[in-house]
Length: 250
Ligand code: 13P
Image (cartoon, rainbow, N blue to C red):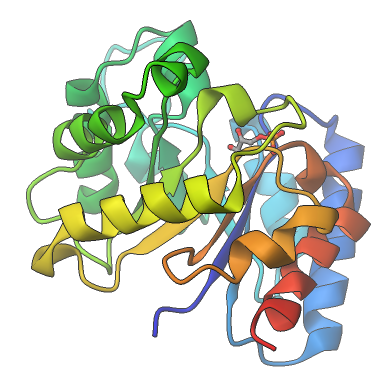
């Protein structure tokens, strides 16, 4: 069975000293826990990768970026390449988060190019998808995520280089979550659509994951971890979500 992944997406938060303290607190907990049978990950803003990477040294907590440009280098002011993230110590990169799809007009084709760049650089791409509230209300959820999945995964995507995160837009930062049946339905659909090539690909759920709801979500068959936003900024909350993995396996 795939190792579960609990990923913290810090988004555009934390000053340098706060980021180092947060990463240090998580590294300390991971070291104290001994060998882990699951994977913790934090994705800080690009400017903090060095400080956070240093604070994570010697711990099992991995480092990831929040986005990458499809190209390896060149005239792309303000962008960061997958190779640069790898060079900064990253093992993962989030691509196609709904905030980037909305704020930067990223299409499935662009997300696919970014996921391909991640693979080229030896990173694991966390490919995000999820429906809007209007799409949920009009019964289009499965069609939307299926289309996003087909459009956003590059050729050669497999369990070793790709993670898929279902993050319904209306559940992000709102405190609202789909029902457990809705999460199960979408994840089962994604699992079927991934087919044989995607066997073992980890499917994360993201959207208002908290210590109070994590165990129930993480206990679902096709949920292989979580992509955590707000709650990942508090080391106690993030670690409590991680600890839910053990409750969920009881
Ligand atoms: P919240 O956990 O703050 O809802 O954010 C979810 C998300 O966007 C994960 O990337």
